[in-house]
Image (cartoon, rainbow, N blue to C red; front, side, top):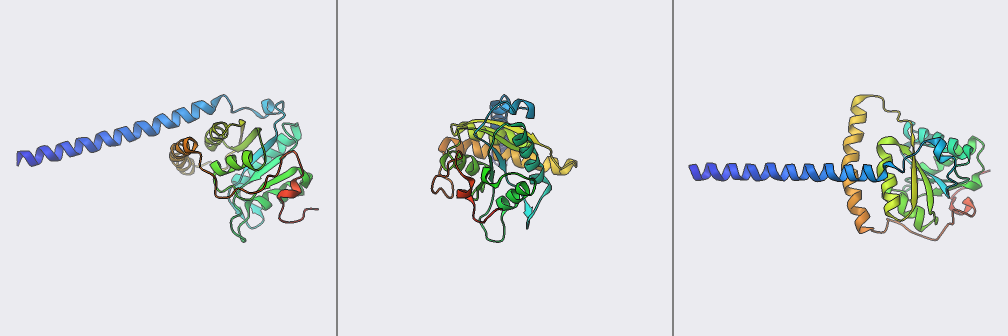
Length: 230
């Protein structure tokens, strides 16, 4: 009986130690990723003087042609940066993996409807994750220096990935439409796990789901379009 009790206690101790080690790794990676990106997260005023290759706006949920609140805030922030001269190019990266779901064209139409020249608004149709958006920004669009726009909770990871892939990346935070405690807590929990995942991914540097022909960010955005904009 004593031997059985001893084994049970030892197993429980091992389990607790394993949980503690996992928690330390999770916390350590989160602190490292956040601290590494901290100096690269800037205000809109600071970004205005950067003359970046592009302003990269990360996609989020859309509803047909209508933008969800999260991505609408990102696009509005990106348009404000465009107005200040932070860059003269927008790169909209999001999910267009299905015919009936299209984040990037909804984002571009929003910009064009507000007077932006469609020839300076580039589309990355295969930005299925933050990592893939950053990888393709460099590999397909030839971006070297960029300003990333997303919500603050997401920004550290996005900037960290871009810099880990060899770009000179800065981040500007868009307003977060989630004002409730539970939505904010959910985002933080998910983001904590995503930082650990992408920390490992940035070491391995796998290719994204799709690559393709080069579309230089210095050229015409029409090369990235799959429909006509007037």
